[in-house]
Length: 255
Image 1 (cartoon, one colour):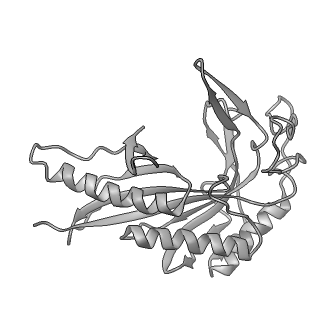
Image 2 (cartoon, rainbow, N blue to C red):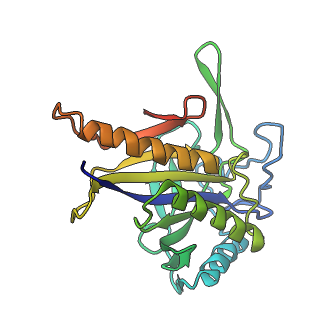
Image 3 (cartoon, rainbow, N blue to C red):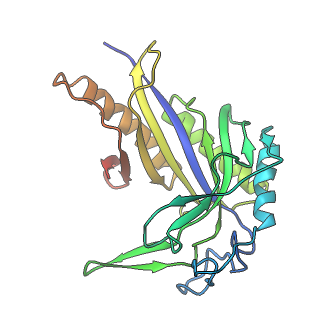
């Protein structure tokens, strides 16, 4: 029987516990219950407004970089990611690409590619009657994104890494990293290939995992699903796509 080796890389987003948002003075309060009160012309993207960097958010990411023996940048640059979604008021997200704040390092034996800063989106609430409501309190909150190298080879190792990262963020007091509240969110990139293969298999991304169990179970399910596709004998191929995870069925689904 052919043995398949999974290869996993993780992308982790963590909201930073600064007093204000990333580019304005609006309160960063994840516990605010009233919608659309922590907003201003800057985080709502009104014409003519200019962002101002939150120094505490930058210091928080640099703390993480120093703690994992990474390379900390002496120069950085900001970029725009264009997304036309209702929960992104500007129509783009201010992020970093070519020049991240942190490069390299290691956590729990897993090598890190990069850590950079960006701003979070608002939150959408889907109501009955085919309409949605958007709360922009979270829009513009400082968001740290960490990307690992594709060096993880089991569901258990991926979950262990996520737990260690959460502990680190809490120890450094830069994020509460509460997954149930969405303060820490994990995305899994996974592929499988025959043992000894020199190339990775086709990659699938599973997004918005909000528990360690979901991280582990989604990887386990994808390994089985991908193996079944390859060995089905019908010439089927794995499709590169984005998938979600259903907590009730413990299965991933195509998005």
